[in-house]
Length: 407
Image (cartoon, rainbow, N blue to C red; front, side, top):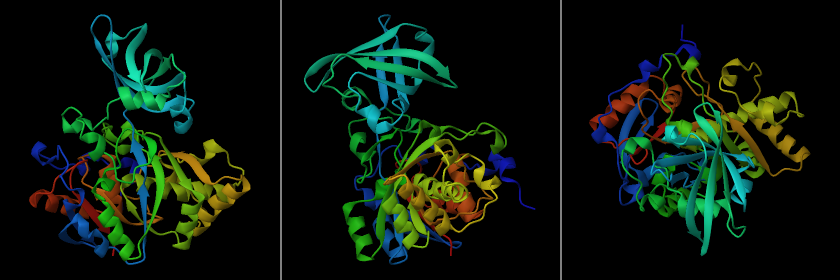
């Protein structure tokens, strides 16, 4: 009998990843990276630019168009202590777009580096934004788990919070790169199709795509649609519990347009996902739709996809019925876009609903992302990662990628 998902031991998803196999920098040309192709147990090696020819002609691909924000802010106290304030998610206003538009005050949930040196008082930083000299003030509020409420305020209404991050913020490259952020990362750590600001980590499978690859997709009549999931810092949070039941997934905010949902319906609720963020968003749609199928009056909190919901929810409707329920809900409320949130954990035992193929990089040992891959290709993840290690594939955010197809 298969192990219940909650009792999966994370130690079963370990492998040896030598530091030299972690790509510290991207290749000069995005689409010249290596591509491992896994199809129903078989493995072959290609160059990423050849991806389109390995996809079913006329299929639907879904991309995450989130844009990484310069979320890391450094303040220096009068004592000389350096305090790092890392913006995780907006609190007031709690909508990303509205928060970035604020012209006087904005509050964020933040991680704080060197916290013990910032017991009380305010932090100040003089900066020049759009030609204006402003003073940015940070005030620490209540703690929420390992994070803190931080109020930011500034003294010029001609400047938005987005402007401040653009000038004062630093791009938060992944901690496992063990290096400082460089100017080049501002370009290379964004996908060429990034649009909607809000992530603190890039949806890295998308880093390999170039205009040339998109032209090749078009030539094979592969439709490309976008959604948004803002990647939180929790994506780097290690699983510290022995069993995954003890690991709390972080909440991530998603938005999907009604047009994209209708396109999914036209494709019978089937898509190829670019990156694990697109996977989590697409699969969450099924559970949001299931909730609405039972109750069209469900509120925002009820539409939030809880971590273990897929393993506990008994409703068994078709994907198309679930997606149609979302469209009906949006129509009833005069909305063009679904805004919701998800804590979904995809682990072995999970039954994929929408995703029929995944483009994804190679993930850290004992990570929830490796669990997601294993849920899709089973124990063959060992074979895939062994092949990648033995054939000089580069790992993690700036590394090479894989195309995983079942059958």
